[in-house]
Every structure is written in C-alpha cells, then in structure tokens.
Amino acid sequence: MSYLSPNLTNMIAAVKKAATSLSRDFTEIENLQSSVKDYRSFVINGYNKAERVLKTELSKMRPNFAFAEDNKPRPQGGYFVISTISSMINFIHAVPYFSVSVAMCENNTILASVIYNPVSDELFFAEKGMGAYKEGFRSHERLRVSARKELSDSLILTTPSFHGEDFASFAELSHKLFKSSNVRIQGDSNMDMAYVAAGKADAYISYAQAPSDITAGILLVKEAGGYIFDINQKDIRSEDIPSVISSGNIIAVNGNLNNKLYDLLSK
Image 1 (spheres, helix red, strand yellow):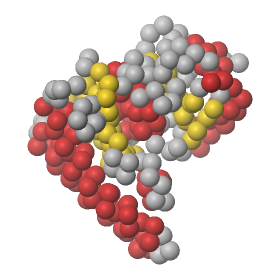
Image 2 (cartoon, rainbow, N blue to C red):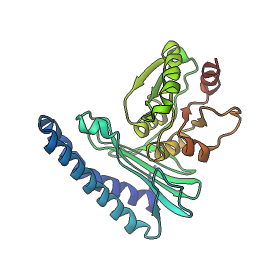
Image 3 (tube, helix red, strand yellow):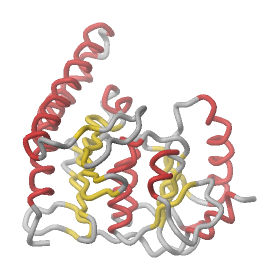
Image 4 (cartoon, helix red, strand yellow):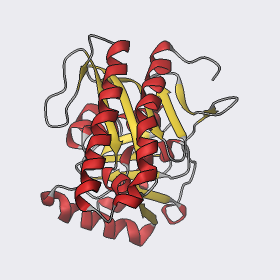
C-alpha cells in the first residue's frame, strides 16, 4: 500500500505519539513492582498522560468528533473509540502483549482503525474498503485471514470476560474449544484480532468484551477477508456488527471455520 489516507496518517501519528511514553514506562515497571504504592501511582500517571496525548492529537485531526465511552450509548455522527492500554493487566505485570488502539467511526460504521504494540513495534491498520495492513519499513504488508479448514489444526484466541455473570458461559465455551482446537489466552482482544487478520490465528471468540477492546480489531478482520458474528446469533448468513459491538459476544473467524465453530458451540 503506497498511499495512506490523511485519516490513517494522522491516526497512526497520534497512536505512536501516545505510545512513546508508554514504551518508556514499560521498561520501568518491573523494577517498581516490589512497591505497591509507587507502582500503582506510576501506572495511573502513565496511563493518564498517554490518554491525554492521544485525545489531544485526535482532536486536532477531527475537532468535531466525540470520544465514545464503553458504558454509554454511541455518540451520533463522528466519534473515536480509543483504548489507551488494551490489556492493562499485561502492562502492569510487564507482559509485552498490549496495545494502543483507535477506531474512527461514523454512526454505526467503522471507517478506519489502528492497533499498535509499542513493545514489539507491531502496527496494524485498516480503512473501510481499502484492506488491512501491517506496517513495514519499506512497504506495508497486506493482511489476509488464514485458509485453515479444520478446527483440530486451528489456533483460536480467547479472552475471559471480567463480568461475573458471564463466567459460566465462558467456562462452557472454553471447555468446548479446548476439546477441539488449540487455544491461547493472551489478554488483549484488539491484538488478538489483529493476529486473526494477519493469519497468525484462525479465530478470536469471547463473551462480553467492551467496545473499546474490539472495535478497532473488527475492521482489521473484515478488511482482511474475515467474518464477524455474535456468539448467540442464530442465522450466520449475514453479519450485524453494531449488535456485536453492543453485546461484546464476538466471533472473528476465517470463512472456512465459521460454520464449524457454530456447530461446535451449538452442541
């Protein structure tokens, strides 16, 4: 992809600027974990600083856009969905699997998204109708979901819900998945879906994920040729992405495994 739209150019710059301080903070966290008080203050201050930078830069780009909040209705018109640190628990334990993510939306449509892991320096981005890509030094790599057809050969990523009422559903889901495929719990939903888009994993599935944890990843999977469904959806002949974002009950999968996953979950 030789051309990046102004939207993506500005979003990538905003994400990288916010991630600069997080990269520095990440290198200090391991040394601070023996002091609970200092450690917690350090993480909170770092998070707040990065969020201010991210919102400031995005507001320069689109002054009239709002910022969506997970526990409130989606704004009307244009808005950003951000996750300053997607997988805070990984970040605070110095586990290098977390991301800064932004999705640019117009009502119920995701227009563009960026997901960046500053530790591994992996940056994924997509724009509606233009494909999904991973940033490269000289050229950007076009992303495609995998072509695997058998659950026994597949790698499925999942994330536990932190809502107590959904734990039983997640336990049942995990039991079914572990019996039929290779499963990993890595802790960052947006990065997991970036890996599905890149063909490193074959599906991502989980209950009750927050909109900020899945919105950016949804566009990446879609633009890489994958499919998005609600776990509880009865008819998978069409997608209903707004309802998936609302419920957080998500399956992101390649086209060869979607029916097999549904058959497995319906048993």
